[in-house]
Length: 484
Image (cartoon, one colour):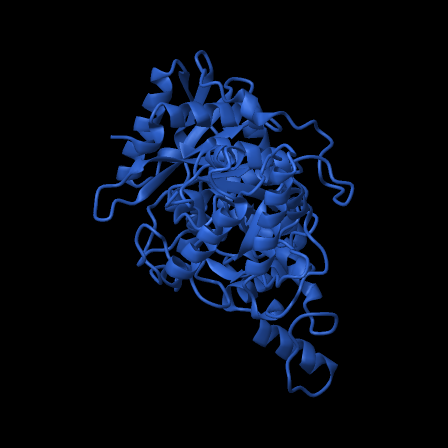
């Protein structure tokens, strides 16, 4: 078979089962494509060719021995470089951890490998997952595969771009305020964040601990459903992981959504790009034709979400990143005079400007005299935003909204205006604050050359990932991904 890089998980397993291709051939095809195409996209920070080929050969030996295929046997996977991978570099796209080799695997990575996945390498991201464009990487920006002059979104832009460019079948990302869903929308792929606690954060380098999620990217809803099932579930190594049973998400993909109530929040359409609005409204029309009842709803505290999110996430970031002091691991300044000077120069030279900005903001809102005025108040607003969703889900089964208020922007266009960059997350941070699951699915394209993808978000109540995937799958099967 000539092209082994455009396949879904089901198609890969079909080839392996019929012995029409080996896992090693599939892995080699991806590695060769990365060498050829990633020079312009730059979605990977590093690849692990020998490890990938050895994992693929292990799958081939299991098949030759007559053993059944595991859920991800032979499936090429990319991993965002904020997840620990034993024996491989985990840099968080930061000079601070440029040469750090992880001593163990993150739970999500360990579960992928136990399910037969082939790890191709580590993908680029905004430094310590802080950003909305993957331009804040400490090494180089990633380019959108649909238009190399535009950003892929962030902070998991490398993972989204790798899947969109057929440089991996599925990928792992992390989502703190939209860092899976927004790049999925910009790159025209499926990206999902489960309920907070659905996937273990053990081995995920912390950015904002009460908001961080691990989740999958794929080119189809079914691929995402299968990958999520593999990585989800209680983990004794993470006290915040939930002991809620994991459903067989693929069984929920029956295409039947007739009678479901779909909420459409008016607050998400008030400052929306007109072309994106037109696509989302067409997408809502697809769900209506499938028999869903469209219900107009209100989420009245949405307007406070961005301010609330950036107070909480920067406060937690300033605390989490205090560990990078040049003493225990990571970068240390080469020249200094005394301990205080070593701390100062190490952090000044090791962190990039966006990380420094967030540490300064977080330190300020946690400082004496300002904690009550900012951090405590933001936590109270967070409760109100969560209550909005809980009350809405008493009325509807899922909520549909745009993923991003604007199309993928040009590289460098917003780098000098961090407030404008933060507003790119305006429709994704609410679900992160509420801890509910969200998915971004392709919803047509914008006019122009080249036509850039649009993403539509679907939310569900806590731990109702099966319903979320059911609606997304029905939308995909009805042609919602390619609206005309």
